[in-house]
Image (cartoon, rainbow, N blue to C red; front, side, top):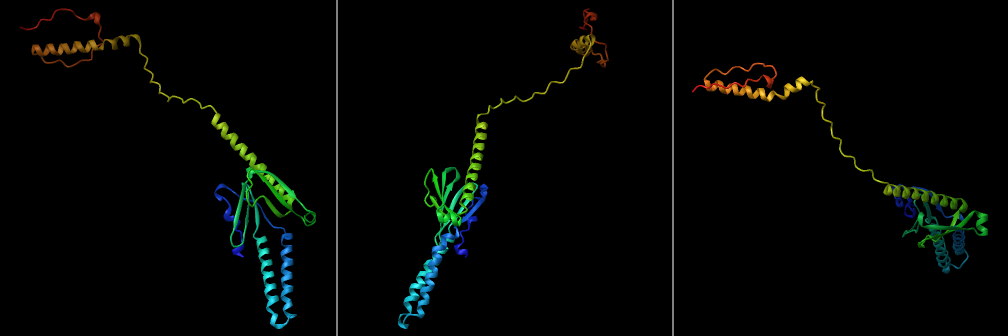
Length: 252
């Protein structure tokens, strides 16, 4: 039966998270006519014992053809599957050549359930889909068992899919319209605090350059006189008020 298996799993969009909610096969009432036809074909085959021997092939040919046609109808009904998923509904049918009709849940506008008198007695009905575009093969699904329960299942799935779609659109719209906060400038590290110094030290540090200049001048004068250059000594902070202004006597 692998040749006639519709293989529903191969038609699912697994990478998008599609799962089967319900898999609907034809109600057994759909094969009642084919079963009666099969029985009639077997009766015709039995007529081979009641016809003249030269005409034995007539009931065999007719009965065999009727039975093959009935068997084909039964297989055709068994290979016709209607599937409800969390994203769409689709129908797979066909024996040797297979056809697939698909309708997204968002395009289903209305579902009508028709239950004839025999259907109410045997527990089946027919679905009629009204959609934005009438897909071929999904306009009417016949011989659906438990039509009320499966109709409620489809309505529930459509409602859940609509709520998920609305929530996703609303979240996307909020993300697109939300104000973008201004970019904060990079934090600049604060300079290290300077050590606190008193007034005297500040004054001494301020006149250090003058003491250095005076020392260099003394070294230059010692070189001109030919005297050894004195080693730098640790001197007290320079005080301009005690600086000598006497003229310097240079050798001639």
